[in-house]
View: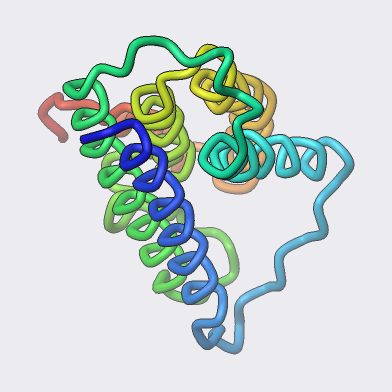
Length: 193
């Protein structure tokens, strides 16, 4: 795989993820689903950072020579491993959105523990982690490569504790039991009760 091909792969992965998300959003919503609350300022800033570091910067790295000064020796093996991680990220992102969209409507008292949510409490964040590692391996650039990883760390540290607290408040002991059974972004491979 060449450096240009690796950059193109990342652009194609971005396009595939956006398309899968768009198709998932356009899926008919069941009658009892509550609309998503509007984003607060922190969420808006983080979503913007994610879009810049995981979409705009890879596109710019592929299309214009602005980041070429930070390129390092391209290693084909890293790029192929990055391709595998990127494919896993796109699949996990699609699977998480699909499982979430197909959950049964209800009053919000049940814990989502089906599909990939059976193994991960935050599969979208796990997909972001895989994506950021794939970007690092595919771009092989000191600036464009780690940009997504730095953003992922920021998003993970700021959002996961807030989301965990909200779910604990909503679901109580059921969510605590779920937390014991599943990993946040890395699956637990222990025997389940």
